[in-house]
Length: 215
Ligand SMILES: Cc1cc2nc3c(=O)[nH]c(=O)nc-3n(C[C@H](O)[C@H](O)[C@H](O)COP(=O)(O)O)c2cc1C
Image 1 (cartoon, helix red, strand yellow):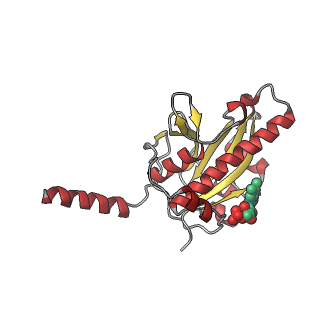
Image 2 (image 1 turned 180 degrees about the vertical axis):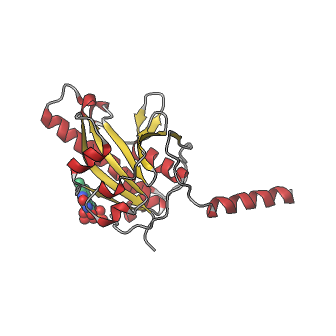
């Protein structure tokens, strides 16, 4: 019994002090999200805010998993429903993840990161100095192929509103997890579109920086 307690204590200690690992470029299966615990919703709402100073400390794979699931993960596997609503359930907003090790696309169904580019594009994800050093920049991209049958005005309106829900999920998760975040529209979209090698049917809506508070 004492040995078991000792082993469990060491494991718990290691999970607290274990450094966040760098992401190897390639397809990354994310660990299942931790969907219990976290801060009570009303307290997270009380703490939600934009912050613009970030430590360079990387997020663990578990924290990245939780963050992306909170943002727009599948919360009803039977229907494919997501944590953020989308107009007509088109699920047209893709979340790209720019980290030091490259650019990835969040595949919500597989809860995995798909490799897009083995290049650090963080510096061009926005026109504010902190974006290049913060560990994670999310880029919300509308896929117009999933919005067929809508007018141009509807596409713009729904892509913007649907991104807003995802962004707020990120804000609340960050408040709960002790992370800093800020959603950003101040982006050179032409430069970023080129850097991401997006298709003509894809439009950048907003970006959001996530990381630990600067100490
Ligand atoms: C659509 C949108 C775009 C924004 N763009 C930027 C931006 O480019 N850079 C930035 O630092 N903050 C940006 N913000 C954050 C706002 O400045 C911030 O939400 C506002 O000052 C209120 O602060 P709070 O979020 O702490 O309540 C944006 C917010 C929204 C909703």
